[in-house]
Length: 306
Image (cartoon, rainbow, N blue to C red; front, side, top):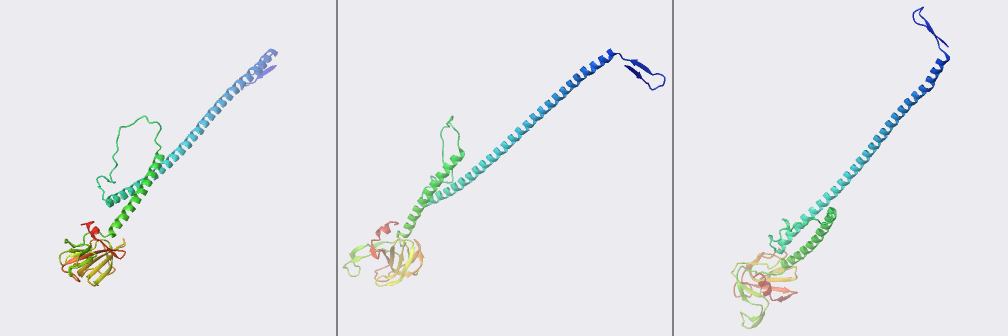
């Protein structure tokens, strides 16, 4: 094989002649080393690509794991917020119940006449004792609050029942005659058989006479409604008060009346003034207590507040 090299300047060309041996060496180099070079180069490129692909997959896996953790964290935050909201709501309900319970306890303390220093519902209950450590298990706050709520509800129901009982008792006491109808004075004639002050013969006295200062007030012995106010034979001027307990109190021999039929009166309200009207020997008030229309001994009702 002959190779002619033509340079850029004229007249300086060279020619070379390659033998068969030279051609064989060139073919061997081209046939062996070039494929090997390109093979190694391709392998390196492929390895680099695989490594890059593995790193990309690892980064993607890390990203997915971070996304899952972020989702789990948000769910945990939401659940914690829900529990805190439920806890705050439960605490608010318990605080409202405790306030109502304290108010109810204060009312009962006043109604029952208890010592407020001993039953003070506005101060914390005294507690104490050594601390115990190492107790197994933890405190279930929600379960404890539920139990406390049930206990408060039960206590409230009991206190309300007690309040109703005390209120009924107070109402019964308010409409049951008890007290001393005159300002001062003394019993001048008892209930039952006595010597009639005008005839001297034995007679049945259906009330109690209380001698008192002329013109002094006569007061109601219990809450009620004035059912009679006027004149009656032998009684002179009379006021009768009907009470919700079914009893009727009668006040007789009055100087003047301060109420009229239909008036509502409370215990201690002035009804009339002490006089000596009717069949009377001097200033006093004749007191009767009627049960089912029949006179009963007023002494027990008078002693109740004497």
